[in-house]
Length: 89
Length: 477
Image 1: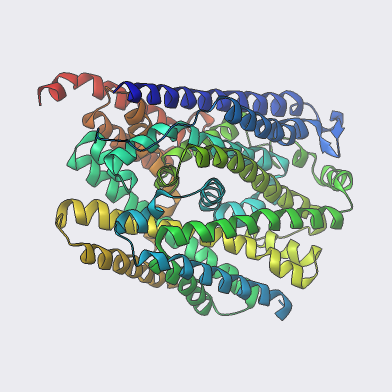
Image 2 (image 1 turned 120 degrees about the vertical axis):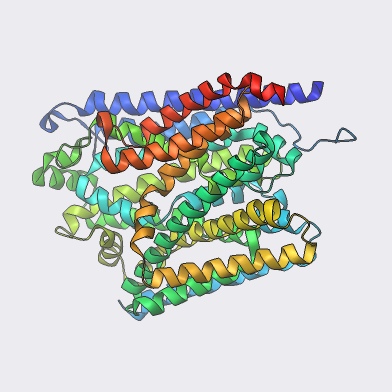
């Protein structure tokens, strides 16, 4: 049962990381979209042809999430076996 | 449409067909048929897992409907669509290793198996199984109609003939190949979706004279098209944000997605799938919806949103390339339909028949039942899609939201909260589905939110309160 607790502890931690990533993702997406996008379209600035709000919220936001997810999974996710080994079945 | 454009579509269908049939071959020697047929023997690697999740999720609505709405609403709809990036990592992280370990221990083959072992309640199982069969069957019928319409509009065949071609190609490989065939063909279909949208996006940008030019044209037509608020300014932040629940985190509770979170081989394949899945989902959703927006200045005045995607492909590219790229929406539809078909079949065979009708069925009988039910279901959907009943269309509207409202807490809290019990789960499911259908029918957009949000909140409250209130009762048993 000890090994069980250890495995579930890892699983719980990784689920919490998932929640944390969603919260971060949402704040980034929301803040740039409505922070920069709420003014008059005539005053918009443009990045690579896109309105700045769209570029930062949707394009950069996606790239940041992809990099962050890759980094976190590589760095903080632990490999554990899924099968019950041996005779504890 | 010219012959040059039709040929790639048929080559695609043939390849999918062959791969599906080949994948089914090793089922013959299987010693654990149910596990192999409905779950691919839990052997999926990272790439196939990521692709099958993405492709199952990216359906007719995101591939045909999505660009059409983006065409009419502008960048605000792309913003909304980007809430789906979340599905790439959230599903596998939240169900995660706990789901993998627990479902292996329970020997669960379906999501309902998990609920059955976790809550040990006949009513939870029956209510779940019935919701899955009703909702997903309707969703599946709607997708078949979409698939047939697409073939119809691309080839000029009649609707019936188009439906027949579509049904035959899907039905054969799903029926004889099971989950492995579905996952492998999904991997091919997902790759086509990925490459197809990229090629089409580039062609569209070139046809529109560059991004700056397109943005200037859009602003000149209606400045709202380049704001986050939609063409009429009706996309409020609250409404758009609530799609984070419907098409973002809520996706965890869709049975066809959750079942994939028990199909992978090991931690390593899960890790790889999270990374690949996030990139692929985000990339496809961004490109797909941008194509819809960018198509507007190039082809103004398209009235039927569903036609934006095929028309822009034919406008911006030579016919043979358009034909290849237009296999992408075909792939999106097929990869969703095949998974739904298998899932409804597994619900009937495993969750209803083996649980309550004939628990002692022999190996051969289970095998015959599984293949038989899958085929019969396919034929029923085919007949329904020929002349779709109103009820199916109506139910399809509720399919995803309804399943999310029903299952999100029984699954997530069932995994992570020990005190959750069958009373909480059952009340939570009934409150979720009931409230969602009522709210969507009578109070669409309560408080400016999408109608799925409040039912998800209330079903959470119901789950926790009822579970806590019945602690003693449960302990006494």
